[in-house]
Length: 116
Length: 115
Image (cartoon, rainbow over all chains, first blue to last red; front, side):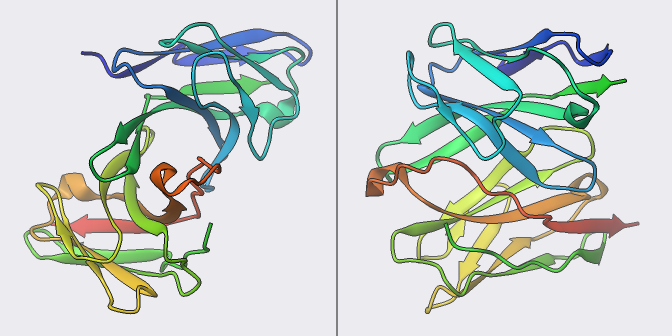
């Protein structure tokens, strides 16, 4: 049981290049999330997927697209990278705790992206 | 979701209890209090959550005041590995019919455990 995995761990892009960040979870969770974290700041939600086949914008979606490929995988794409997208990107999946009607998010190790 | 206020930093001696406060004076009746922590360069880690009763698990205890306007996370015997940023978050549970699923992370409290 690997939990939440992310690839790549590090990436350097030039302005205007595109790339896709991959995220997968093996916990059979319905919901998945993409966050970004800038230096000295808390995490901000980019996009989320409440269930397979659905995606919704978070608070900072501009410049990103997502795909919920199946229940396990949720990818984040930068079509034309900009220096302002230099950040650490975290993927998370969410476990419902039905008995107590509360949910807990499990985070991946992050992707450190630098855009020059 | 309600806003939370935490001190920016705290120190604790190794082996002593670390008590991390959080104010959430505008919390609603259906909002839970969650605590996560982030050890340097790693993804956030869930610690504990509660609604109105005190909670304890293998990692920590959560004390919520009777009026629910504040809470305290207690690490009973802090170790050097507990040095991290601790985030207090309030959030409507999905079971309450909330549609906003995000966790709103503020700047948290940097807890430094000293030898």
